[in-house]
Image (cartoon, rainbow, N blue to C red; front, side, top):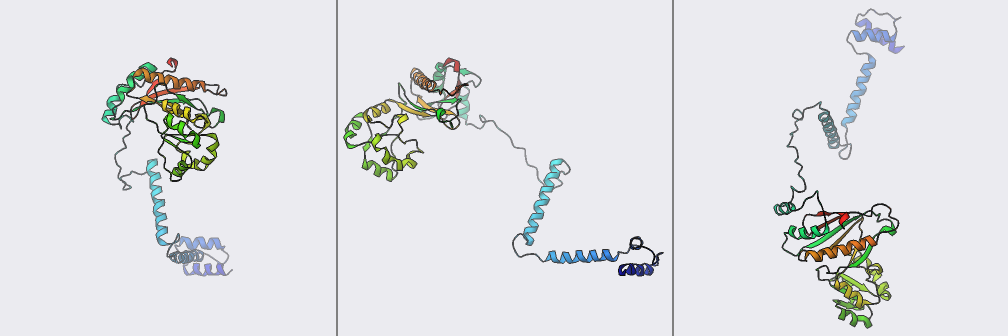
Length: 337
């Protein structure tokens, strides 16, 4: 009732046509029409003013500091401008944003060097070459100053995560890889002489382990005997990532170290499918004759075909490509292999 009495008194001062029988709503409406705020609105204004005073009391640092709140406001304003520009409601020029030139997308060939573009013209990307044609064209596409390798890349229809489909094996290339291989032999003292005669570069037992302790790895292939494999287990973290850990499947764990060294020197190489189901292997050098390159490649492809798991029901060899080091690749016709 006190509120109504105040409203009546205020209405009388404004000389409004109201009486004590008028309701509070009628009194507030009459006062509002006269352009004067009601006590309730005055109270709200007072509350807002007091809240503004409270907001002015900001923290010196942290999320409630003036700097942090300003950054949040600027970020929100920026996001709002972006949305308006994206929807077309705001012109970037009006927003004060300088629009730079549109990015130019270049093809991979356009980003290559002049020499690469020149030799790439020798290869028809749409054509599937026979193996005989490929080994004749590829040496012409190498412009590097060193004797580049000729690489074979085979995309297989397998799942490497399955144990029986994790393709791995060894193959002896008839004409070798063209690369001088340094071979280390970890074997008992009674087999050191045979390993040296076969052409091993490093032969030893305890002294060899001392080199591994210092992480001195100056060899490409490591051959070990079965009885000494337990001593190599602690060096798996060093040898494993480099692909040097001896393995029975690759023929590098054997009691006949002399024979294993001869095979490795003659051109025996190991291949293994990677996570993308691709086998990468060098089958010779650019300096090889086309005939030698062709025979090496055929031996590798036959070995891969023979390694097909019985669990693979679809297409096994999906794609075969050949290339030189730092050169363009070409696709082989599967029907001609």
